Length: 393
Image 1 (cartoon, rainbow, N blue to C red):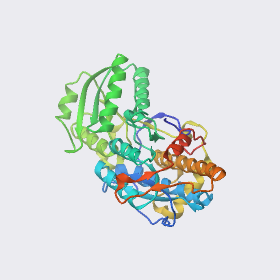
Image 2: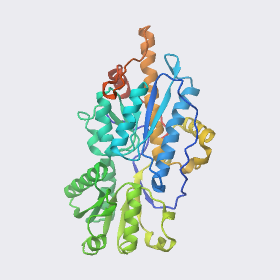
Image 3: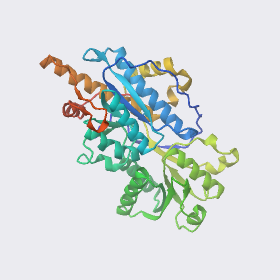
C-alpha cells in the first residue's frame, strides 16, 4: 500500500547551520470557485523556528502543486481542482476539528497530511469513515504501514523502519555495541524507539536505557546528566521532533553531556543559530540522520515539474522561498503526495468520461461531518495504489 515517488531513503549528514525563515503567511489565489478540493493539514506552531521551515515549505509546495495542475488545465467535470487547508499546531483534536469543518463545508476528495504521526493515527481512521484517502508527507510511525488497520493511508516519506535500518548500518560501520535512546512520549517517539530497540536487540546491540521526554511538561523525566554520566554507553540516539530536539540538546549543553564525551545522533533538523555561539564547539561531531530526496544522491527526478512548482511559489510567496538548494525535503514529499492525488483524480475522471455521461465525482453531504461520504472512494484508491510518475522528490 506504500509508495515512494523517486526519492532515496536516508543520508548521514553532519549538522549544519541553517537560516531561519520568518513565519509569513502570504495571500495565494483563491480557490473558492472550484467544486472539489484537496485538504492540506500542516502543523504550524507559533514561535517555533525549528518547525517553521517544514510547515511553510510543505504548505507552499502543496498549493504550488494544485496551481500547477490548474496551469496544466487538469479539470474535474470541467472545473479546476482547489484546496482547503488547516493549521493544526500539532494538536490531535485541532487536526480533527479542521478536517471535520472542511468536509462539512466543501467537497473534499482527499487529505494531504497531517504532519505528525500522533495526528495521523486519528485522522486516517476518521477519514476512512468518510471514504477519503490520506497521504502524509512526514508521518513516519511504522504502525501506519498496516494496510488492514489503515487501508486509506499512504505516505511519500519512509517509515521509521527504514530509519532504524540506517541507524543499524551506522552502528555496524563503526562497530558500536551499545547506546541510549531519548524519545518523546507520543506515537512518533514511542513507535520509533520501539522499532530501534527491537532491531538493535536482534542485532546484538544493547540499548542500555530508554529515556522519556515529556512533551506536555517539555522536560526529561528524571535528570539527563545523571542518566548519561552513569551510563556505560557514550552513544545517544535522540528520537524527537525538531522543536523538542532543540530543547533536549540545550539541556545536554547546559549539563555538559555532549561532545567530545558523548556522540549524539539526532533524527530531526535543528537550527544551530538558535544556540549560543559559545556552545558551537561542543556540537561538533553531532550527527543527523534524515530522509533525503533524489537530487542529494544523484537519482532521477522531474526537474521540469520541480522548477515549475518553485516558480509558482516565488510568484505568490517569494519572501519565504529560500532558494532551490535550501528547500526543506518534506516540502518535496508534500508536493509528490499532492501530485499523486491530482494524477489519480485525473485518471479516475478520464475513465468515467469515457464510459458515462454522469458526473465524475459525487458526495453524500451533511452538516454533521461524520455523515459525509465521498462516493468514488474505492475507485480512487484502486488507481492511487498503482499511480506511477517521476516526482520531484
